[in-house]
Image (cartoon, rainbow, N blue to C red; front, side, top):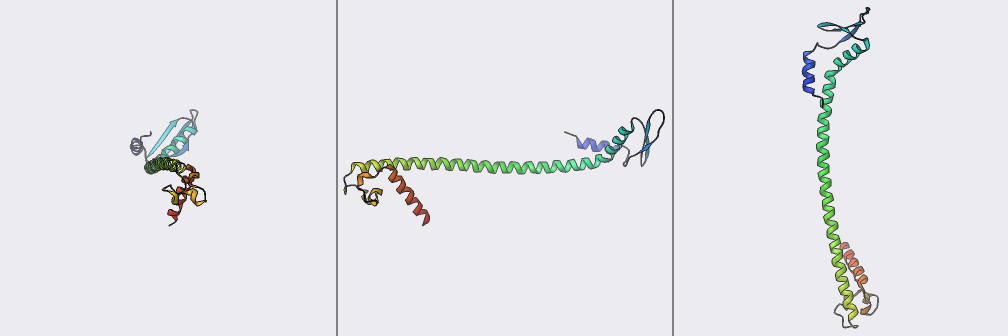
Length: 164
């Protein structure tokens, strides 16, 4: 990662901006750069000096933009972590609800099987659940109610209770 403080320190100690490229052509290809308090002569290709000059002029703005981007990135990271925690809580809550629903469905199926077994062992009129029996609602004899009938009756009762 770029050390912005060190880069700022170096920029502050360097020749003040703005730098400009002036051309000084000799047999040795010298390029002259001018700054407010200093004239510089480089023994380099003109393209290199133009690049160095442009980079030196841009460094303070680049540092400011990079600091701002890092600050925004940190804020976005904190927000992302917060959202991730919230999402994980919802996932955990949903998993707990799904587990509870499956447990209740197992209990419902177990009770429906017990009720279905009870119905098939009773004679008409002797079953203590005759008036609650789903088979009696269809005019069937009590011994015809099976597990699925009790599940259907339980689901219908739950729907009606939810509408109330």
